Amino acid sequence: MRVLIAMDSFKGNISGLEASEAVARGVRRGCPWADLKILPIADGGEGTVEAFVRSMRGRTVRGPFTGPLGQPVEAGWGLLPDRGAVVEIAAASGLPLIPLGQRDPLRTTSLGAGEQIRAALDAGCRFIVLGLGGSATNDGGMGILAALGARFLDAADGELTPCGGSLEKVERIDVSRLDPRLAETELLLACDVQNPLCGPSGAAAVYGPQKGATAETVQRLDAGLRRFAAAIERASGRSVLDLPGGGAAGGAGAGLTGLLGAKLVRGVDLLAKVVRLDSEIRRADVIFTGEGRIDHQTAQGKVISGLATRARAAGVPLVALVGCVRGHIGPLMSMGLTAVFPITAGPCTTSQSFQRSREDLERTASQVIRIVRGVLRRQSGRRRPNRPAPKNDGRGDAEQR
Image (cartoon, rainbow, N blue to C red; front, side, top):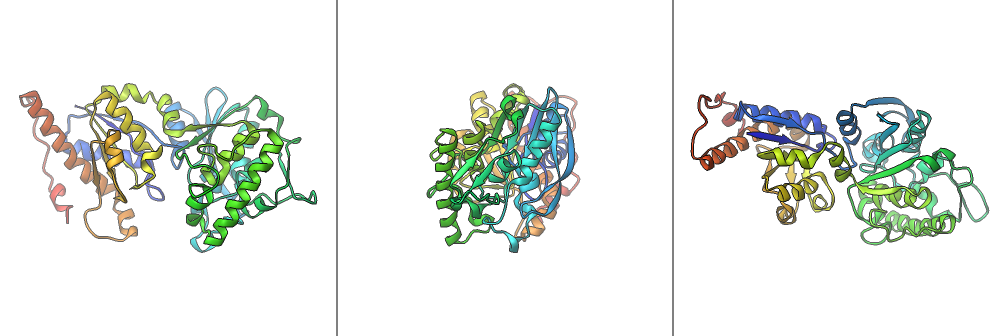
């Protein structure tokens, strides 16, 4: 039996690779002879650099950059073969870098992510993927653009600090000093959402509150992003107000598309080509995937939805192991997901679930693969010869607590 394992990260807890390795241990317990394949996968959020570096045999480059509140942070980006690079906006401009009580999208900046892109240009890279998931910012990409040479001016021609609070003051954008190397660089924005820049489904309304925005702040940011979109159109001739995905990363999707001509792509589709995902799915008997939480956004471009459509096309069952389920799973089931298994063994705090995530993944995978093994054996009409039943080490039942 060939088992494909392609886990996304459990945000703020374990990486996609760590989750995949835990699932692999569980599968080996439940079916020791299974042929396992771990495939790095991500959708533009946490784990994107790791997935590209691992699958393309690149390396991670670390250095000092500007954090979302202007503080120095140590962050990494991926140097890939053939003058390629991959950057996660979350690495230097991510929400986990700010303590809960200090989150304020009027103050935060994406400057550090722009510095990482500049470092990639300095290294000779001319094909750059920027993952837009997990940002702490709502600045329309002003910080990134400022690091690359753009200047944002108010009505008095004063230069503005690149942060969310400056959006409502932008009158003019000076792109005359943009890094000339950008003209010969392909910039792809790996995105897992389709939200527009503004409005009830926009960057501020949907993602502002989790970044620390009050109701009043959401209104200011939304109005500021509208003003910013108008300034972008005056500077570049490109309209980004209704751009699908323009609201990603606090509007960075719109800002970078409008002023740099960057291209928004579904992150999971981009990585799927790199790792030859469709070919691996066709060879599999069953696929394991998962992430920390299934919610209303999962069907809109996340790893699980990307795998579901492909699994359905290939006729391969897809099982999701997740930390929890929030909302309806019907859309995902319609897309091709076979079953969902929350891994938590019983009532616990978030901290406790984080501590047990690896063992919970291992235990659940072990139980699921036993079911799959039994079904496949029954379908074949015979038992596999000379293969002992997996050892019952007691953990499968004991861990149910």
